[in-house]
Image 1 (cartoon, rainbow, N blue to C red):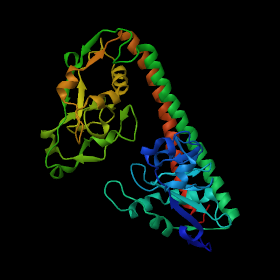
Image 2: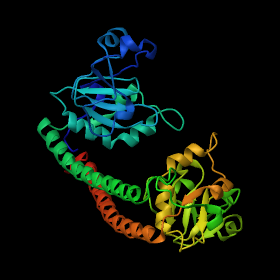
Image 3: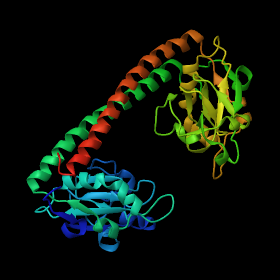
Image 4: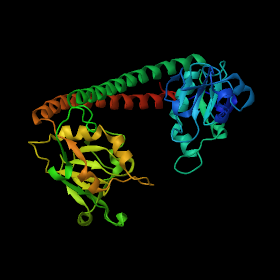
Amino acid sequence: MSGVVTARIGEFCETGSGGTPSRENWVRYYDSGTIPWVKSGELREGIVTHTEEHITEAALQETSAKLVPSGAVLLAMYGATVGRLAILGVQAATNQAVCHIVPDPKKADARYLFHGLRAQVPKLILRGVGGAQPNISQTIVKELSVPLPALEEQRRIAEVLDRAEGLRAKRRSALAKLDALTQSIFLDLFGDPVENQKNWPKAKMGDILRIRRGGSPRPIEQFLGGTINWIKIGDATGGDDVYLYRCAEKITEAGLKKTVFLRSGTLIFANCGVSLGFARILKIDGCIHDGWLSLEDIPETKLDKFFLLKALNAITLRFRAMAPEGTQPNLNTQLMKNFEVILPPIDLQRTFSRQFERLSDLKMRQQRSLSQLDALFAALQQRAFRGEL
């Protein structure tokens, strides 16, 4: 921002972290506690007004837990939620994974500071130390610099970004409601596909369709850089829960001998890794990693593809529970061949499929709108902290 003072967090904010009172002293530190106690997993880029747990006055007096004033900005410093932010809407305590940042009200607006920190989360994480989950220290937080225009200007910027974020929140809520509606329709028509309360006939998947496991050309480095889509397990995360439209890497034709090439429209199922239990319909041609199973030759008189996809995705957590314990949980191909799928009347499956496709179209439009709003928010955020908003 031209002509605007830039200051380090430590120059105009007080920072600190909390603690976790001993669980062994449950009665003294937790039982009947009335003081909200915020854990890092409860930071969700919004305002925290309720917490899962509360602590007692004794916990404040006798442990490292401390009260943090309402209006403080909270930042997760390590763990799976590293980099997440929130604003504290009530006076509360936090655990040790949360850094609280209390701005001087004469110098900084809390909402402005929240957005300023949010814009720099990637930088914070890069500066963190550690392995797969970097730790952000209070020292790193204190040294971070943010522009500090006049308070009135800070509030104006925060209001613009708040409005843009509100639109994004509405789109995310609409998407969640569409997911819930799809799930409700499925359960109303068919019941739980494992419990099978409606006593539908069942069949082993291996008896009624073809299941093939993908393959991985090794060493994979020798086959990368070609023109053929290389669909890995991670490609199913963070995107559409019905279709798989894109993949991160491509391989050469020489790699085809070691894997399975599939056409767009094929139903695939992840049997290991971060996407274990996910079913997706390919919207691209490509080769699948050996963590994917292809489900082919689905008999149209017995199974509708969209019904099968939803039935599999409805029990993702159960599939994960079925996988043997290990560093990389894995459902072997034989286990999936022996898995019994329910077979409701095909006309009922197709009725669901038509409803499902209509809801999927609605969801796709909402997702496109959210993507546009995400891009707008990112642009506004960049302009705001360059002094161009």
